[in-house]
Image (tube, rainbow, N blue to C red; front, side):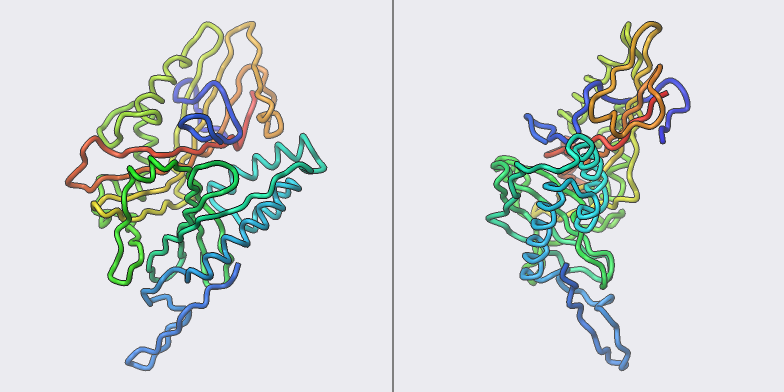
Length: 342
């Protein structure tokens, strides 16, 4: 599981199963169109048709279904139910959290407060082919933050799954700005490659972020909590009298990002990344294992402990010709997903 060939790389000293890094925080089948072309050929399911990824009514049903099953999964700590409504990095984070809580409370959570949504708007781009996706921007009864939830449908017969979650306050939403719309009033999705016109294409954000965290080189990212300050914090734990800490950061190509065009030509992008932290203790020092890590542990932590986390980021990427200070982070949600002792 661990990518450490030997001493050196990167991570953090304290672990939380899920947290919001800023202050202190943590289907209905798509009715696809059939197009009769001038030649008489039929394109089934609308693979070549530019059309809204989903109707607003169906998007509302998707969110409603998610809410109901999410409540069941979190009340019973049921990983099977969770897998019916989540995918990608979000599922990996939540599955690990449910596994830990199930170990602590096999009977579930009788005091669970059902999650409720309100004041929801749906950011729906027009797309061709599959997969398709949209964003639900909603309030909940959990806090005063707006939840930006990405839902993805892989193919015509698939269910919709939530794949990304970002939590933003009103000031952050205002700072991000307005979304660009096409001639039909739909938000505009951004290509993942070079044709995006962005300083860093959305498809390369995970790779660029991992490279930045390795050595801090380059000017792609603006200074801040999750960039320059994160590197500074790591230096405190890289070598101490009690232990040595190594860090490895990786892109997650298996979890594709999504991006929406902003009115100023930039984009709001949501992407995932993977982070390993290995602490090797000095002679005579005992390995400290966080409670959540014990449930996820592989091996025996006699001398060292490696913690694996998946992180989801919401960033604003500037246009290629107007880089300014660089990519700005607005939210980072992280969860412990694995642990290995040696």
